[in-house]
Image (cartoon, rainbow, N blue to C red; front, side):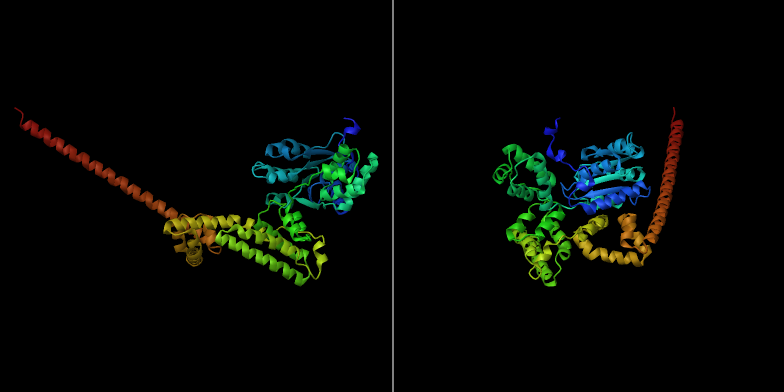
Length: 473
C-alpha cells in the first residue's frame, strides 16, 4: 500500500504521547502507572482506559509502546468473547517476554462487547480477571462505557483512566494540521462545520475531512454540507445527561434525549443522581427538582392508568424542564463535572438476589395458603419473620412444612437463622429415623401377615388331605 492510499486516520495518528490533544491528565496517570510497572511495584496490574469514541484510547496505547519500548499484543472484541480465546492468546503473552522487547503490553480493545446479551461466554470475565492476577506484563483494556455492572470485577482490578471528549477547538487544531500537511485549500467555515458535526469524535472528523477532500478536491463549506449528512449517534449515559444539562432550548433538550437507548425511567435516575453535581445555586436546583418531580408524577399516572399520552409531558419536564431551570447562575450548567452511576440502580442490582429470594418464598407461601404474592409480602411475611425471630422450635417446623432453603431461613431471621437451620436438621433427622422405624414395623407386620397366611394355607391343605384319606374308597 502506497503512502497516498493510507487512510488519514492512520496516516496522521499520533506517534508520541506529547502529540495527543487535551488528554494531559490521562497521559500523566498512564506514565505514573507504567513507571510503577517498570520498577516492579505496580499499584494495579491492569489499567482500564475509558472515554467516548474517537478520544484516542487505542492510539495512545500504540504510542505508549513505541515510546517505552513495549511489544504490543492486541486482542479486539471478536478475539476474546470466549474463555478459551483468552487462555490461548492473552495468558501466553502475559507470561512471556517479547522477542524484540523486554516487555509486552496486552491490549484488550473495546471490552464493551462483553456486556452485550449473548456476546460472551459466562467465563470470559473470570478468565480476564485470572489473566490480570497472573500476568507478568501490563494489561490495558479500553471501553466507551466501563460502568456496566458486567465490568465491576474488572474495575476493582484496574487503574481507572478517563479520556475526555475533545472539544471543537481541539478537533479544529488537528484538522488544520492535516490540511497543511496535505497542502489542501481548506475553508475555515468548512473545518468548523466538520469539527462541530463530529461532537468530539476525532476519528470521525478526520474521516469526514478525507471524504470531503476526495469528493470535491477542495474543502469548502458548501461541499462539506452536501457530502456529509447529519450523524445519528447513540450516546453513552454520561454523554446524554451532559447534553441534556447543557441544552439552551426546549427542542434541543428533547432532541438530545432521543440520542440514547436508555428507557425514560433509567434516564430519570441518571438525571436525578447527577443534578446536584451540575447545578449549585439552591433556587436553581429547587426549580430543576420541581420539574423532575412533576415528571415523576406523570410517570406514575402512566403506570396507574396505562395511558402513554402522559409520556410526552414526562420527557419534556425531565429534560427541558431541568435544562432551563438555572436562572440565578445559568453558567453553572455548562461546568464540566464528573457524573456518577445512579446509586439506586447500583443498589437494586446488589439486592437483586435478595429480592428474588423474597419473591420465591412469597410464591411458595402463597400457593400453600391460596393467596397472591403481593398479599403474602404485605400481610403474611412480616408475621412469619416475627415468629422466626422469637421461636426457634416453631420456626423450624414451619421451615420444614414449607420446605424452605437455608438462605430463605436466614432471610427470615438474621439473628437466629443458624439456630433454626440446626434445629431443622435435627427434626429432619428425627423424621427420617421415625420413617425408617415405621417402615421397619410395616415390613415386620407384612412379614407376620404373610407367615400367618402360609400357616392357614398349610392347615387348609392338611385338612383336605385328611378328608381325602377318610373318604377314599
